[in-house]
Image (cartoon, rainbow, N blue to C red):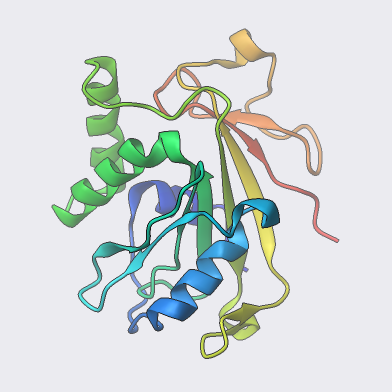
Length: 194
């Protein structure tokens, strides 16, 4: 199964696997798997064009945005997030397209958010990242089995001291804070695996 790195790659848009994207319909079907079931019907969906660029596949009408799988990475890694995170996500996509590294993207977004040039996700907004191994994905039907979902709750600029959260999970499935004190501060929730 894809590791925790998948969430980091979603944030930055880093890629490396190399295959053509599925059809628009399959990309939408799969991207929606990351969203809460009651939010799927009206969610906005982004996916990938044949040139590897992120494109709008479907404009929605609710607060949920879904991001389809990057075909250049092995396995399935999709996400859903609150619409308030869209400027943050889009900026990451733009910087990745310019060839920036993960660290460069982090540093640029940090500086831009401190300067008030980049709108950050709302406090408490959520991102769900759903992953699956390549062998568990049917790219023709848009189905996946043995999936795993991690959640992120954005709390920009928060610290371990301001929240009482530890810097690593105290036990299976327990929340912790990642990137404390930065624009990307967030609560990580990795449910215990069966």
